[in-house]
Image (cartoon, rainbow, N blue to C red; front, side, top):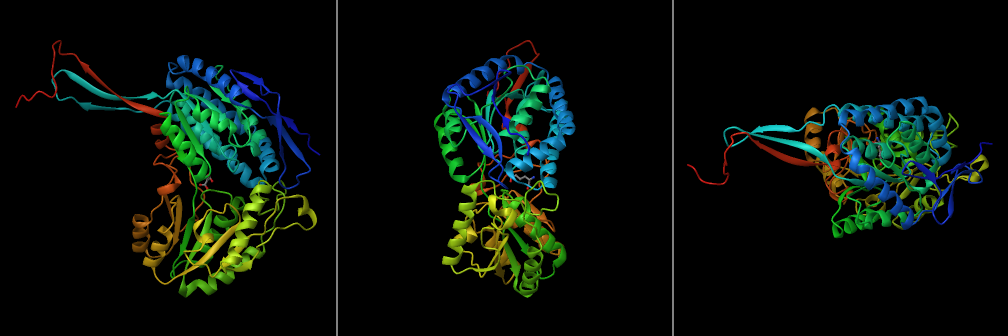
Length: 497
Ligand code: UN1
């Protein structure tokens, strides 16, 4: 039996309990009897201390040359590589994802660190001609200030890295508020930042549960930017508060992603994509495939292949290398997914496989839900429109390519999307007409890479993108600089023609 960890806040380079002394617990979702960690239940007073530390540190950190800032980030990459296995094992125990996926999550953090370490030697601005003689015009990136990063439990290393590393390379200081379910992973990650040697106050961590800490950060007058990944409902509240308090805000919210399988698709390939997209990470990705739009000519064949393949998936603890599908993260998620199955029954969808909690034998102390395929789903049903965030996928029959695109787009969300077809014309047309931030041609809806923009349209976000150079636009401001070396007053907006 592995011992549990005691996690603390990290403020101004010190590991501290909550000022109130209150704590909370994170437990293994594959066996809730196992305590993984205790962590501080922080309040506004703890947030105040972190903001003060981050504000003080900002004065100096913004002046550190970007290539030197990148040096610390490179060290994060090295330490993540060194501790990859240990961190992956912890993640698998704390939030349940299969160990191979947990290693992939840490690897995404490493890739991100290598990418933004390199960015420290670019951070390109532009030069452009001036209208006037003997005058120079250019743009430079300047940091924003103190950034609050509010992150979910489904990618406990990758998502904090997506936010923290571009923020830091741009010269901002940060306060991470991780999800309570993955407090131990967050503490491990911040220990790595500590070991990488960032100056005191540049990186801070405030644990908490529910919205208490997030609210205090979002309301705080000395926070300049909030970056949030999570539900659309919470995102709307954060967006409203940031609007009211004049903060920059980057929101990565829900998805209702679809994979189209056309009549000319390679069905084996589309099958592998559907299984991975729908049931990978137990469907707990904002990029998860939750609708399969199947052309009527292949629907019956594809459906029986899909059910047969799904029946072979092994449910179990993430730490077991034979597990294909781990538990849901907590009891609330289990109730949420079970609730959607009640909705499915009410709406007269047909459960082809799964549809219930799995609690037999080794699974009885965990939050397991059977991989579930719903048939006879029509686009107007709630199960076809609302984000479920679990191992549940709806099959919808389509008569044509045009109808598939129309149904795919008929959702308030627009994060990821996929089409399987051998027709290059349809592929390009889909790329153009699908309303989503990400489109895969002959690949599943999950698996975005760190050097491309990540984010979505419509209610999936607020127009910003994470990852790649797009994240630099979130975490820096453009400044336009004019240098007049003519030695005389040159007046713009005076008509000399
Ligand atoms: C998320 O679920 O919030 O594209 C992020 C993917 C992963 C990231 C998912 N690279 O599926």
